[in-house]
Image (cartoon, rainbow, N blue to C red):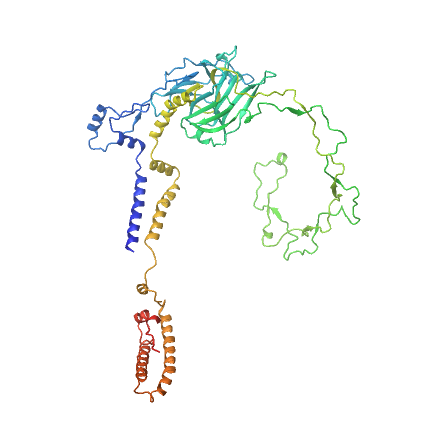
Amino acid sequence: MAQKMRLCVVAVLAVALISLSLAQVPSEEDMVEDILGDEMDIEDDLDLGIAGDDEEEAEIDQKETEPAAPVVPKVTYKAPEPMGEHFFAESFDRGTLDSWVLSKAKKEDIDEDIAKYDGKWSVEDMKDSKLPGDKGLVLKSRAKHHAISAQLLRPFIFDTKPLILQYEVNFQTGIDCGGAYIKLLTQTPDLDLDQFVDKTAYTIMFGPDKCGEDYKLHFIFRHKNPKTGEYEEKHAKKPDSDLRTYYTDKKTHLYTLVLNPDNSFEVLVDQTVVNSGNLLTDMTPAINPAAEIEDPEDQKPEDWDERPKIQDPDAMKPEDWDEDAPPQVPDESAVKPDGWLDDEPEYISDPEAIKPEDWDEDMDGEWEAPQVPNPACEAAPGCGAWQRPNMDNPNYKGKWKPAMIDNPNYQGVWKPRKVANPDFFEDLHPFRMTPFSAVGLELWSMSSDIFFDNFFITNERQTADRWAADGWGLKKAAEGAAEPGLATQMLTAAEERPWLWVVYVLTVALPVILIILFCCTGKKKTPAAEYKKTDEPQPDVKEEAEGEEEEEAAAANQEEQEETAPAADQKSDAEDSPAAKGGEEDEEEGEDEEQDENDASPENLDEDDVLRRSPRNRRVRKD
């Protein structure tokens, strides 16, 4: 029992310590501050610094008596530098749009008021930036067309190396309806970035897009028909992953497209694959058309019978079939309820209604009081002329139709014959797309302040990963360092949803209660348990013990009487012999046993004697 109590106390203390630690979970900034100290300096891209010595001394002089507030470590931003083979790299850290071209064109086939690409662009920090100095391209206007583009260092040609395209997007104010996708503009002699519009030829379109509850992550490329020279858009299958979080959490996300020369592709968000496949099998419509098509000139013969069932021509309508019988008839067994008021109308004119003073009978007609339920009918089963209710007509059969049988002339569903597809071609290398020489953003959005950053195009995976680590990796580390601790997040969530307090209380209280019930309760030992250290049987209750003792005493008396009777007959003949002495001893033992049985009677036994009594404690009789 003492050991269980000790376990109980230890368990309760453990739960209390866990609860206390949850209530006082240190933030990530405090942990970094405690471990690294005031003079910590990281030589990598993550440089944790604190305020200068002069500022600290001034704060100490002003707040000698106040408790020191935890210092949030500041992550120093360092602009990423492209290394390795690349075709385009833009971090916007120069603070200008010198290398970008704003479109001056107008959209066709729409109203003049909204045809202009007059949406505003700006290079600035994020609103809630965790990296001061990290600038990006921001879409500033709502409900306007935006178009901006930039030339690559050199055109990208699809040959034996992969294409890696990546950039960052942050929906700072959320997104209702709009896109944040990028277009890789096809290299053509007439490409003019000043006239960049929605119909400008592109090779690939990639990026997030949302309207309503439709969350998309586009990957579209324009495939050139080798026979006709025409271009057709090919769309990748929809990702299986849930994309909702990327549009609603207001964090910076890294979008990456990888195209390989073996026609495989990968779509990644935050360096996690959310969609993958093959250009030959996972695009819609398919890259290669069918080898055979239905003959457009083939026509179904006039005598072609497609009916699998027909009416039985030999069926005859039964003579007693009545097609004119109504589906319902009056119920002749119905009886008018007692108290039915035949002379009272169900509705009467409202006696309290008054004709309006401005009522003009010439224009409005004769005034009539509105109808109200007849108060005389409230207590009656009904008013007005009583009619029998209708019931289903048992003789109703409806219109007769002959039974359906299998059509002996059924020929199946007709299909036109197959002929060779005159437009058939087989392109086994769709990766070899049209080269592109510029990137562009051509967007319409109902949300503003969409943040773009760190555009990068290369044909080396390691180079792209290094650029991502220097740019997006730094943002992720800064956002992670600024995130509140677990306890703060739980309190914030409870403030927004007060019902969470019930969950928190049950989460802490329920384990404590279960531990107490498990450790601190159990069966209470009875006094009889102290005597169950041997195999001797023990009575469960006093009444059962008394009944057993009475039965044993009666059996012993009967056995003694049977044994003493022959012994008395032999006493006179063998008085001096050893056998006689043995008989005397037996007689004395019988008297002793009789005395013991008398003592063991229910009247002379107390509770302790009952508990100690057992058939195994009885002395063995001598034969």
